[in-house]
Image (tube, rainbow, N blue to C red):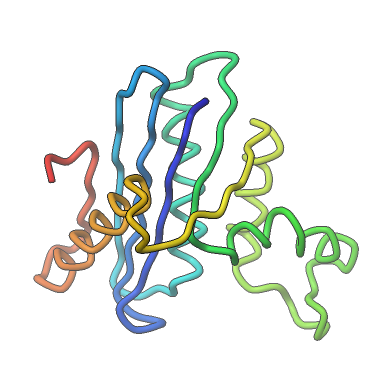
Length: 161
């Protein structure tokens, strides 16, 4: 199985934010990608991390016939594409309060990827010592530090942390 760990975060919400994805292949090979931005929200970064992790795997690492599992500490991400989306689609992308669903374009994009590649969505407790989750958290914090220190568009691909 391909395991794609993802995480997103913000300093302030909205504020400086980053996302990271750590992709584990069956041969124990690991790939890490991450990026950030000056002004965003935590939920946008969480969704973006999942999207970018799947996209990177599909474009650069794809192994035919391998199931994909996304592992995240964000119940928001999991609920968006496994539970809430059912009613959102029925209600023309309106939530229970009849207001437009926030982050709808990212949710639609993630849903498309999850459906197309039959991705299983899995929750992992954050900051609990899980290697993939901890690596993502450390990496996105490096990204946010870089933005704080003045880098315009920091990006990490397979960093030596």
